[in-house]
Length: 567
Image (cartoon, rainbow, N blue to C red):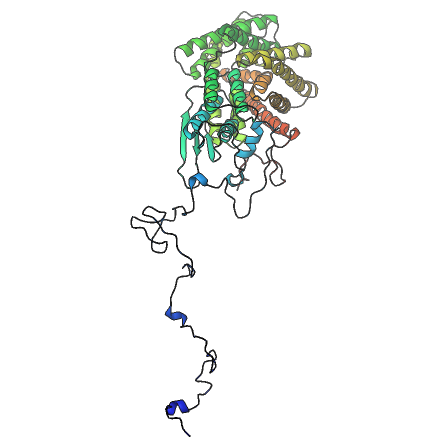
């Protein structure tokens, strides 16, 4: 019997090849979904049941017409709709995480900030605002940056190293809550950039150092101000910091001009005794140095550059030595007179700062400082050579072999070295509380040098490096104990080690047309100067081995100043 409603095809059974393996069996009532090809969708489409957020006329990524997220185009630099600059996260965490850094409060702020500067930006911990600001919404960024630049200007003008200046600037900005700040220091230019957030425009300010002067009392006052700003026990508002900074600028030098002139004479006289001079040589060298100092002040008042000031200041001591030679006196050593005058002029402070900047990676600033040292040295050479040449034309019998005359009076030389350091400290306008420490440091430096070079027969250059290293070591320890800069404890103490004798005999050889002998002696002077600078820096770095680390970077030791490994 055949069904009436069925056609021929309905009555014919289907083969297995004509039926899909995924077709539901007969008798099931499950609905069959349409093929996927009939509903093309984007893989970024919202799931079913999720409502898109409406975008306003000026919403993120939306144009004037607005629309949904899928209908509008946005820039790759547009922040997401959920981002608010006022509620930004405190720090960015990379995918691999950030090593834990614990900055101990017991460590001086110099070491803490130096550790921060030597860390990559992504690994620095977020800043903890120490000082309270008047505005509840946050610190006044332009005022904080201006205060930071003014503090950095005083430090750089006072002869502080570039890394220490950057550390001070970084400490000030972090204390007032500006964590995304990057200071940059060159020889005459200071700049700092602050970015409020990762998507906001950075704010950059700069300041130029027009004049540089030596006043370590002012330098110590700036260090105390930075120490108070970075301390949690002392509240220093922006207005209070500006007031104290203005007082530091207005403060007069601790020593009057006549004391500085007398200190220059004491320095030259002590240096002449250090190399074998007697009481008469002491008086003549002191008189020549004081006359040269007054002439240099006169040139400075007329606006002449420092090159000509050094040239003029070097002439009177050399003239005094030539005059003693023309008298044919056998009781005095003219070379000691000229050497004493050179001790008072050699730019040891700038040399140490320049080499320190080079060793810590600030090559532009180091090159500028060393170029300045070279110009000063050329000015001294020009002044002394002019006088020596005139003396030779007048028949002066200058004896280059005088440097080989033995002079071993340990007690007298130690006292002379301490007097030299004392006079140097006064010339650097140091605080009276630091003069005694630097005087003792200079005496220790000469004792080490004399024991190695005179008694032990070691090379004078090597002995100078070791003595300068101890000066740097003790200077850093003194500065950490007093929370001051290390320069007042180091610069004056290296005075007895300066290569005054080698410089004079090198110039004498050039004046007498003995170029080989002269250039050899001048190269010894340069090597001694570099040994002083490198020894001071090495001693400063070694001193930190005896102090607690300000931070533990993933359990690793303190990072070096070198930012690359040479490749």
